[in-house]
Length: 289
Picture 1 (cartoon, rainbow, N blue to C red):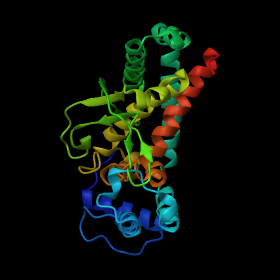
Picture 2 (cartoon, helix red, strand yellow):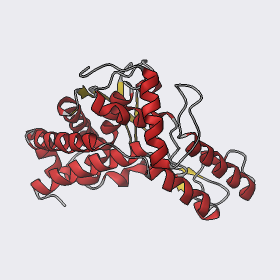
Picture 3 (cartoon, rainbow, N blue to C red):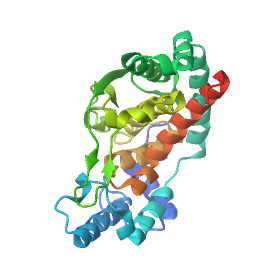
């Protein structure tokens, strides 16, 4: 990697000081693998405990949480999560890479024709197009000197999960996976998976929304590529703190059943920004609403 290689303990100590300023925490790292987001995880546990007490649930987070029952805990957790952000270097690199990916998508005639013909595409043609878009993103996107992996596209069917206690439901639209998130050096493949079940299908009606979902999931692989440098401190100095923040965010992932805090996590905010941003630019250039 570029730049001077620093000792991992120095990297964690630097990030610890940075996060203290961001989160206004006071505890000291006990080991080089500790981190101040322990407070976030503790708050997450308190939300789960509060929900258990409120509805006497056996396994709360299998189902969507009714956040109106615990608004204060949710608001506190969201505030803490939203204080964790990226460096100006990462933001500039993300903007540059989004422009490159946008141009690459618009230069691909199959993608352009597919998006324009979206309402007439067959189910399989539509998901093939989304996989192609994710592959273009993987091929052209660079953050610092880091690249994501080419995606393996997987189609699956999963019905909406409904909480029998209150009738609230949630459905997985798509997901991304690398072995062990790729953050512990166990990288096998990049899988971008799309849910083709009828419960999820209406989310793919709009070409713009569907494209943003595909790009959102591929963005998670770019994040993983960056986060994977954290344990060994392989990231370039400009990305070191970003790598550690993404490492924390991915490793302590809050499930989507706790929806508002889930969306407030650093890696989810970043994936939405990139996915929705690129999709908007592409569709606006093509005159697609």
